[in-house]
Length: 139
Image 1 (tube, rainbow, N blue to C red):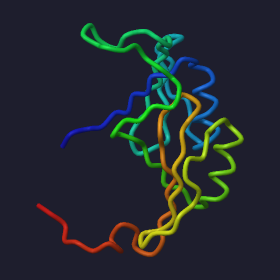
Image 2: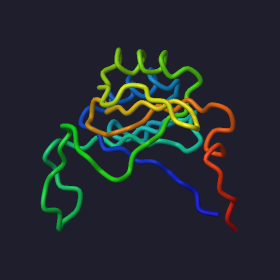
Image 3: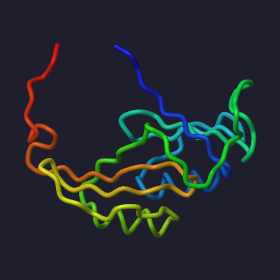
Image 4: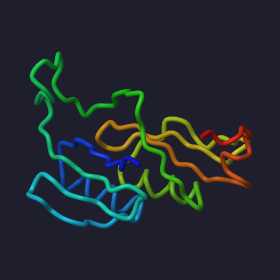
């Protein structure tokens, strides 16, 4: 089985530590150096990587890093017990609400962006969560 590690580039490592520990009750595991911090408490560890705005992520990159709101097909979902309390908390810590709480067969969902431009969702499961959508398990 593959293990998943989450890496987030941020332009202010201490602000990112404050946001993610305050918003989601994560805790600092290890500080590998002043620009590389491990956060624990989620199902997968989250690694914050301090990278300057404008720096290039790889040699053939067409653009440098930008921490304004950007879209990527990959985002994080944080499952919470109380979506409205979680939404209030993340906003107080600098997140932006992009779509307020909406109701779905599996529960409540809110779309947000962290202070570093990364999209994330808050998700409060109801009933059987995604199992409310049906479908048989594969494999």
